[in-house]
Every structure is written in structure tokens, then in C-alpha cells.
Amino acid sequence: VIAVSKSNRQEIINNGKVHPSRVKLIYNAVPYIDPGEISKKTEQVLTVGEINENTFLRKGLDLFIKVAKKLPDISFIHIGKWTDSKGKPCMKMINYVKKISPPNIRYLGFIGRDELERYYQESKIYLQLSRHEAFGVSVVEALTCGCIPIVSNCYALPEIIGDFGYIVEEYVDEPVVIIKNILRSDYKSVKPGASLDFSIEKRKKHFREILN
Image 1 (cartoon, rainbow, N blue to C red):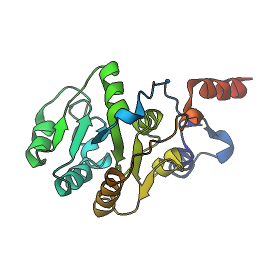
Image 2 (cartoon, helix red, strand yellow):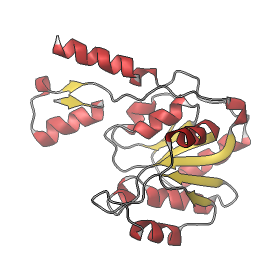
Image 3 (cartoon, rainbow, N blue to C red):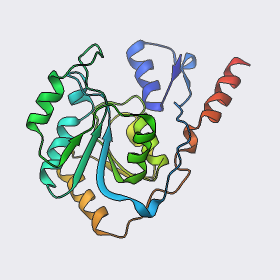
């Protein structure tokens, strides 16, 4: 059994009753993204993820909205598909989400890969307040582009960002303070290469080791 994070491995062992010797850790991988010109970062907060009734709480979108309400002068951006619980295109949940959101949040829906990378490249902060994450691909992509990640202290997220961001125990007021501090100070991006542990080459290497 392949686990995509240490946290995910422990979940498989505990919940699946699988012997630890049968569970191998191979981190997920993300393709290389050009980090762009860090000096051109915009004072905006980005998050990426699908919106439906199952993901609204699990991905912490309710918390993202609460943080944005406390920072009305800062731009918040959400990117991701609008679906139903089966993953089919649906407007029901996004209509509810927009109704409870402040005007400083923009919901862009699904966008092309090049445009997504542009938002990673220009955003100073990436905010992920999930209540559960087996890995966190979008967080790694944001790291690759020099965003400063702020994540909840839940499951794989602290493991994934390591020393390259902020891990919060309280999910509204604490992120608000951190965002204010980042935007008030001289901006220092996450150094390039922060996500090299999650390269495709490294994942291939680990699979080859197992197969051999």
C-alpha cells in the first residue's frame, strides 16, 4: 500500500488495520512551475480547491471566508471547480458560498493551467485551512512559486510545508494576524526549491526502488 504522506500512512495503518511493514511512503509529486519574478508579487491571498457540500468544511472554505471578512481591504482569491457531491458541474454550493462571502473574495472557478500558475506566481500568501488533507498538492504548487503558506495544524499540512511557512492552531484570528504581519513587512518569498522533495523524479526513483 502506497501512502502519500507520513500522516496518510498512519491513517492507513490505524483505520485500514494494515500492518506497518506493508505501507510504503512515497510522496505525491508536482511538475516544475516557473516561480516567476518574486518582486512582482501582489498583496493577495490565494487558495485552490473544488467547491461542493463535501469539501466546504473539509477544505476549510468557511474559515477562508471568516478570515477574509476580518481583512476587508485585502484581496482573497479562490480557484477551483464548482461541483456537486459526485464531482459533476453544479452551481448550488457556489451560489450559497458567494451569498455568505464578503466582496473582497473573488471566485474564479476552474481555469486553465497557465492561468493557474500565473496566480500562484503573483500571490504573496497561500492560505489552506483544511480540516483534513492526505497530502496537499496545491500547497506544494504554491510553495514552488514562492508563496508564503499559512496552513492549519491538521494531518499532512504541517509535514508538507516544513519550515517554509506558518502553521496555525487557531483558524481565524491567528491567520489574520499573520497575514497583516506579512503584508506590513518587507516581503521575503519562500526560496526556490522549497518543494524539491516532491519532484516527479524523486517519486519515480522511489517507485523503482520498490519494484526492484
